[in-house]
Amino acid sequence: MIEIKNLYKNFNGTPVLKGINLNVPRGELLALIGRSGIGKSVLLKHIVGLIKPDQGKVLINGIDINSLRGKLLVEIRKQFGVLFQGGALFDSFSVYDNVSFPLREKTKFDEQQIKERVMHELEQMGLKNDGHKYPAELSGGMRKRAALARALVMEPSIMLFDEPTTGLDPIIGQTILDYIQQCHQRLKFTGIMVTHEVNKVFNIVQQIAMIHEGEIIAQGSPEAVQKQNNPIFDQFVRGDTTGPIQYI
Amino acid sequence: MNWIRTLGRYTLSGLQHLGRYGLFLYTTLIWTFSSPLKVGRVIEQMSFIGVKSTLIVMLTGAFTGMVLGLQGFYALSKFGGESMLGPTVALSLVRELGPVIAALMITGRAGSALTSEIGIMRITEQIDALEVMALNPYRYLVIPNVIAAVLSFPLLGAMFDVLGIWGGYLVGVKLLGLSSGTYFGEMTVYLSSKDVFHGIYKSLSFGLIVAWICCYKGYTTEFGAKGVSKATTQAVVICSVLILVWDYFITSVSF
Image (cartoon, rainbow over all chains, first blue to last red; front, side, top):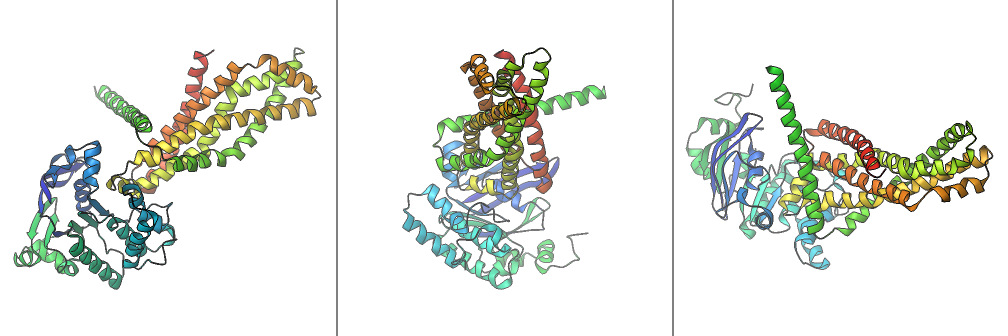
């Protein structure tokens, strides 16, 4: 379960998060939407303890992640799988080595078990024959899929996805979303997915939250949020250039 | 009163930076002695920092020795002391020029690459990825480099010394006609194991300085490609200055 309580964060005097409150019950997947550069990725980094808040708490299964150090922090992070926006694959490793890396470092699996798990993930991502390639040899979409395979290979109980389908063609994008849904049903992880493809995730997620000007302005089930008639949410989902959100 | 405020701000900022450098080194040393070593990574980095710097160190060593041979012979011949060319070349190289120039060369070749590699890992979130996998980035990125540098620098320094002495021999004996017996004979009289250890201690400390600064600058890189280039430049400049400053202090202590 992820609970965010009254979270504030400033960067060089500029407020980015202004009292965020968010609750993701155990086993549910939440889509976090909002304009580019509004602080969605910053919020994800707070959840995993990479950024410390100026004020407020991030509770993971009731434990404040920012109060943890050393082994306790390591233990809680073992529960996480994170798909970074740019993939964050290790440049000097092949795709296979990238995906097998957490298994090698964090489990006592033998080589055969590692191979089975890695090949299964790569097959799901359509990268069965690309395990030997290095990240620099992959397209943006392939990189993202490899990163997703790495994030899921440990079968985490908490998953954070930072724009899993951005930069992918619609078919691969949909395949990835279907796979995330499949994994969610199988692993029952608690998750947050930052995305701009609101309409495509309505059927996958149990909750949607919209962040606007540092605050959560709408949260609930996809159906409930749509019925709220929130003009900011509606404009964002429709992609209108006119409305309360001023881009230029 | 504004200048006092500005001075105070710069002083505080400088102290804050120094504190961060210190904390980074402290954390590195703590983890070095308290976590299992990634031996494979250490060997990999020894190959990168050490083996791949061999050619440039040998080349610069040989030419430094040759120049020392020429200049030494010129200066010594002013008072008929040409027979002291061997000890002059050897002492200058073993105590001073070997460790210092080798360290400066490795900083330019490997130190800059370390900073940019770690810096790129920082800006592309690869270090964040290690952290969220509950893995310690120091163990994977910093400690292997520190150990590899501390082990490689003395070896490369020794290589520099040997090639330098050989360069001095080429010039002094083969070119300027000094007898090889005089060149090497006097050397064994004046060069002691204390001088050799002095050079080794210097190289060890330079290895630690270069790995520490270069890893720190890479680890704390910010703001895209420009940030990486800035961090790399700063790392090379700081290392070069620190090598020379530290060299003075270590020499004066053991003078």
